[in-house]
Image 1 (cartoon, one colour):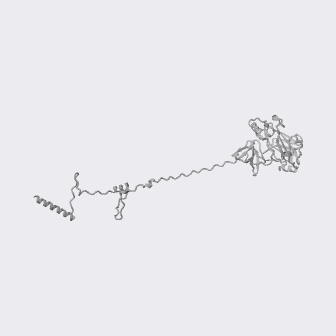
Image 2 (cartoon, helix red, strand yellow):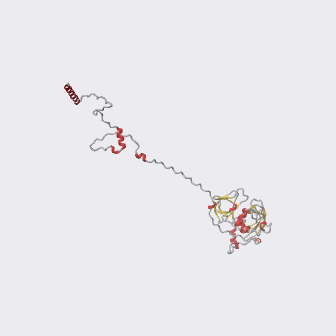
Image 3 (tube, one colour):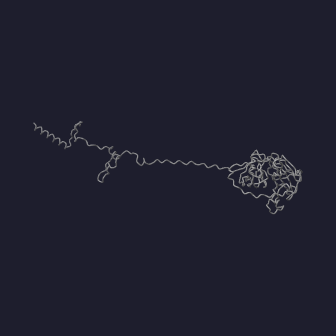
Length: 372
């Protein structure tokens, strides 16, 4: 029996081998048990795509480059991820647009003006001083552009309506704008003063010859040519009376008027009506002596001019500057030059601010001359 069994087993194996060799289907092997695994039936491990991806991403050396003889192996395409360059590039933030700087507002030009509530007009002169002729006047409420100043800042040079230049006293007007930048303007030479009439010679110190510093005296024709103003009567002299001639600080408060006619030095002329620009006061020459008159100056300010003859003949006239009894309206230089405040400009300015000058007691002289 044993021998027969061995023969049958051998035949069975041979038959099975033959069937396998001929491609006959073999029955499915029994499922493996948990304890025994046949090496013949164990499937070979399958290379998963995820393992390839991990190998590629983990290290560049795990994937060999294909050789010239080997055919390329098709590998799964890894899912795209952020490249190194995209993550390392900094985000470019656009620079903010510069904020436009507003242009500075141009500073207004300096001007001088006369307050609207002023009770008198201010004279415009051809130079920085009361010895210069009057070119016109600034009315209350009017203003004018400033073009220059004198050395001590007491006078302003202004531009007039006809583009000519004039000067106004700084303490009588209000300045506005950047006055610190106003340049110093050259002043024209002061005009000569007319020789006073014989009867007024004792009242006026000096003469036109003395004011010219010893130069040769001018001829009457030369002097007349400089003093003519284009009016029937011209202002040829106006000045404050010095303190020693006015009786000190308890002295007079008057305007002494002289009227002359003919070629310089001229002769007294009577019957000429002089008055203030507000038509409040009128006097006639000859009232206080040949060719003279007097106007009382109370606590006020006024400009004078010739108005007419007493027979009704009308006259045109140049206007004087503003005579005032208010010491704060009088230039400190004028006060000092006439002996007030011991002749010190600084003391006069201090006294004006502290009401310690000769308030109200100031007198003036003015001469009107008719050459034809």
